[in-house]
Image (spheres, rainbow, N blue to C red):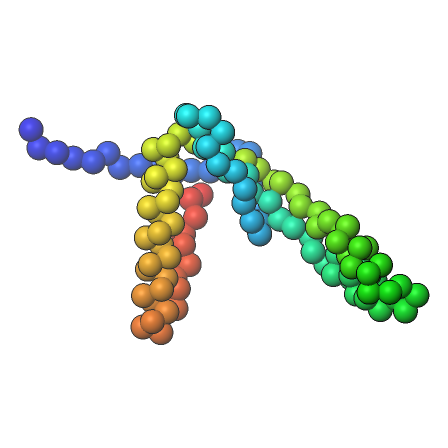
Length: 119
């Protein structure tokens, strides 16, 4: 029997959302599911506060260090993906392939093309 691949037709769900994220966290939480949460951090206020502390002439170095060490960067978790091991491997291979392509394009001085998004 001749082999063939089914073609996929992609469309966005009605409640589709895009998020700009700066980091991710997660891992295998059990033997079946890999959880990957995406978040963005808001470092700006922390940097401003750190500069205020460093500039405070009423504090000695030890007090400045203590205050700065207590600062926390607020992070907003926007979404979490839960996926089986097979999907994690596919995602890993996809990202690895994309990064290798991007590296090759940069070496050749080519622009990185925009990726079409499903409608």
